[in-house]
Length: 220
Image (cartoon, rainbow, N blue to C red; front, side, top):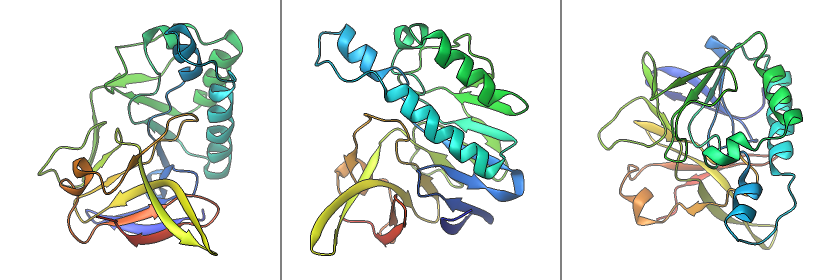
């Protein structure tokens, strides 16, 4: 699959332009921060009314990644739902869509700070997932090594063809990779934010997503 190839803890991985992480040897696809049902949650709490298509758009892109990769294991790396009520409010059509994506695969929901606990949508819910030599969790831990996480929704900015472009981005150093948010309407945190600058090593890269991945030194 097309993307940026790199090695973490001796494991060959591919950062895909969609924001998903592919582990070829394990036929293992990882995505983070789907935030399914976000438009419903915003409207329910009195915020602006957004077109309620975010879950369908996110699932459409995920279905395409699964079709291309033929992944046998899928890990959703936390904040898969915007809150418990958003999970319960998923229309039946979208619940069935998730069930079809899960069919014939191992499916793991890793707990995130938005994820309140198990929801009746199949798969397995875990606090984190160790698959030696890697560990998959929602929020990065200082001092960890071989770590795959999400949570921060990192994004980075470049100048391309005379214009400024900001995109979701992977952050990568020799200890960890932080995935961008996969879900629609998720927004992002600039990777020069102190929360990320203090977490990532000085040599860290930002991999901007899109049809062509741009690898740049992580802006500080």
